[in-house]
Image (cartoon, rainbow, N blue to C red; front, side, top):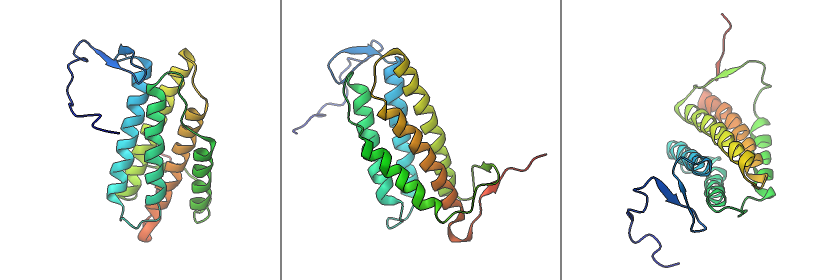
Length: 181
């Protein structure tokens, strides 16, 4: 692959535009840049969550795969007309949700973010994921996109919610339940 990023600063963005993967330039606040920028933020949040978990934690492998798939989604969003997200990634998330849910009690109350630091980080990642989903939806209303990216983000937010529930209960911990006033 060579030295693709041998020089980090190029000064080409000093005018408020950024280069897309197809070589075109677009404003830094465009719907497309907002979408892939929020996906990048989500990827960073998942990296933070992974750093809080032990290296042998059962969720590490899937979270690592998710980070790679989010990088693919960012690439897809950066190159108009390009498609990288596959149905298998969505199925992998559904299988992860099912596996975690097997060990959780039925959800009868609203859950507040918290319970433990890893659970809280999973909730933060979930909320960033929902924002990424909204940004990608906005872009899809303006331009043609593969529907798989939106489906992937929707399923990922579900996975992160269930993961947060599981993490809150690890090592004898508890979920934080919303209490009506």
